Amino acid sequence: MMDLSTGRHPDARASALWIMLLTLASTATTLVFACATPFPALAALAAAYMRRTDGVLLALAAWVASQAVGFCLLDYPRDAGTILWGVAIGTAAVAGALAAHAAAARAGTTATRLVAGYLAAFVAFKLVILGWSVARGDVGSALSIEVMARQFVRNAAILAGLFALYRLLVAAGVPSPRDRPVTA
Image (cartoon, rainbow, N blue to C red):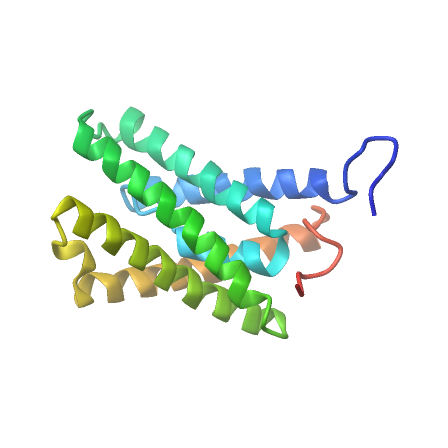
């Protein structure tokens, strides 16, 4: 239901707050892991608790923050290849968010929405990265089974941490981005 005085949905402010909080949390992981922003984990949490549009906005906000950290703090090279790789990661993050929402919409409980969203986001993210890698002629080690397994486990652990942070903040009184978990 829309609040006629503001023209916004009642949970729009809460969604904006959560986009900011989760972007900050992902920025911390980017700094700790030197550029490993947990896009699939963010997508899964967003798919369970946010509207699809907000999930895409979260993916974009986390991507912008990741690029800012990379170029401003981690001294990424400022060349066309690095910038193009950044665009590839951004498109993969958005694809992951969309896939997570599509998968979570078919799941029942919060736990199954998180798992389905995470699996879909991880696969979509990696498929888009594969597509960009093939287009660039550089399929390389980032898509090796060993690297993907390590990333899968790390992102799953980050998802668990983000879920715990979400539950802790909601219990402390931070408004949920939705009155109830997303079901469709």
